Image (cartoon, rainbow, N blue to C red; front, top):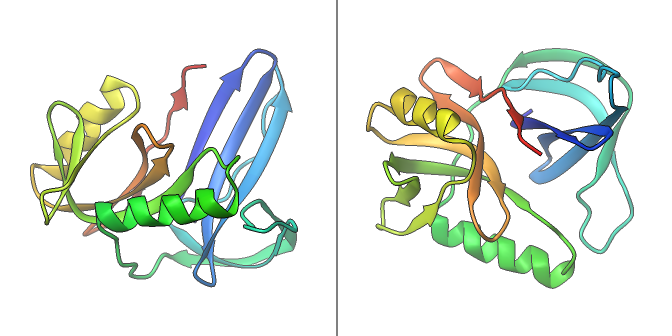
Length: 178
């Protein structure tokens, strides 16, 4: 379980939960009508044992968990990618499905800079997305050093969803404005 975001739009609340299953990213979607609570989500930063089924597609991404989650343990080590690899992966995903709105990536090591940019070791930079309060907190947690961050790239900005540090994965919990 790598990251999660909850959005409120008009009369609908949507939660996107991202997990990695056998090297493939999976998107779990949950919905609730306005005024209704979503069911509790799965724990970000945990490794779960469950059966994941992908919806048929030329580029499978949407998934559901069949049955029950059998166990949870702290997430093991994961390797981040460069910003160049992010752009390559995003382009390949759009080539398979031009309607895809976003791709997810574990970046690292990267540095977060004021002016809301993420920069990798090669000096490549991409803009960060999200509200300023979240980005300030993320910058403070990084303490100016290299971090591994998981988030969504929509072609315009990278929206951080979780930060991986020495003590494990920190979910960046918040609701994004509609």
